Length: 341
Image 1: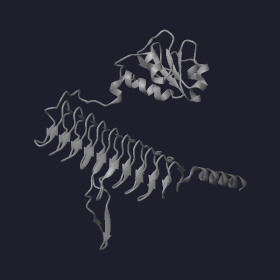
Image 2: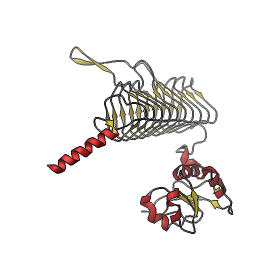
Image 3: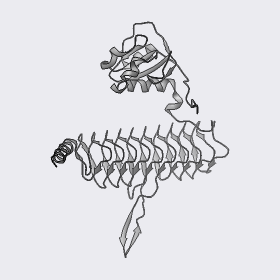
Image 4: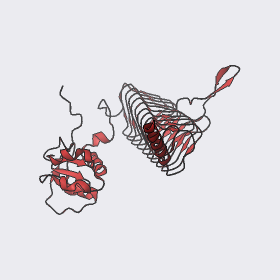
């Protein structure tokens, strides 16, 4: 089965532009890069990158016109490939991709809609800004506000009094209720925001529902992965800080506060009333207990079970999670004991 090409380069960049992005001097004859590819697939006029020893053999035979390369591998680049030697090849590569393939950077209408589809449902009291795109089947509720240049995908539901900022993308089948969303926010398909938090109390031999009266606040430049859920707060808001990135299938419970510029991988579950500082990184499938605090710049390994507070800047792993050095010391002791047995 042949593979389809879904993204074609809309622009080209010059080698001198790439050098400028990398903070490098450029004194040779300029040339044009019209596409990007992997070490194995890139050809004439195309750019690749390399920063992992696993791909040394592919690097040696690449036919790319240019390669963004870590200093330690720069001597292995073939003679026919121009080297941009930088300690951050992947980050510069990402910036070049954004110039070559702008449609892959920010999602657009799946229907090629210009303006508001006649098949969209917009309440008479809703306020829709300038140059907004609304795909067929989307519903905008009473008193909702949609900022300029925002795109609302097919069958998305924007609830009553919800505010969506400027230059946002709300994917297909997304539900946003009881929420305020900032500017330049990307919410991928299937996500649910602002539904009930999981609040129940046991009384008279049965579980009694606790009404959830808060909302959700999502700050600027946040990206929320597909099928993620963010519950509204019980009495106050659930908060996602500026620039934070949530992967697919993340669960954020009621009253959680996540700081700025965090990265949270797939299948992480964050229980209610947990506070997470700025620049925290959480690996996939980690579970965070309720009512704890994770300090800024902490790192949590994948599949960890966090049961207590984590100080700022520390690295924790394991079940139950503990400092990484302690975890690996304990693991080494167990390994030696197992060998003795």
